[in-house]
Image (tube, rainbow, N blue to C red; front, side, top):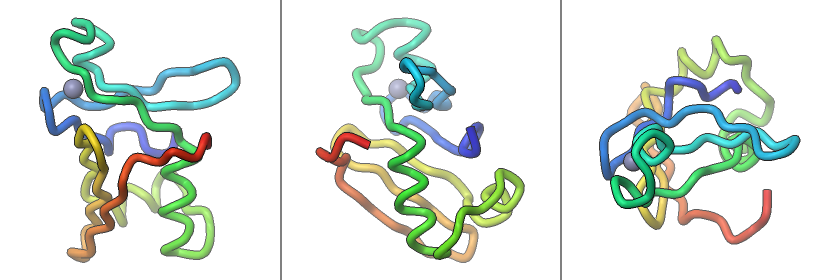
Amino acid sequence: MRFKGLIRCSECLKNYKVKMYRDKVKYACGGRCNYGKDFCSNNPISEKELDFYVDMRYEKQLSAEELNEEIDEIVMYLDKFEIRYKDGHVQSYNQSVINF
Ligand SMILES: [Zn+2]
């Protein structure tokens, strides 16, 4: 749950919150969780997928504390997401078809 508090929905502007799907940690739009799919149809993202892209940049796994120091916010769009780092670097990815 290292990304808690860092992920924002571009559609309804709510924060993403932690959701467990069996043994997998995912993050889901708080608006969609609270008010349903008609309110916001943005998709969840798995922690593993975020780990994959962030670890690729740093070539190691950062702690929750380090992530908070490095990442400004992660913005979820309907078809992609952006990891915005505090140093100004932005990584943009299509939502993966790989099952993380
Ligand atoms: Zn939303």
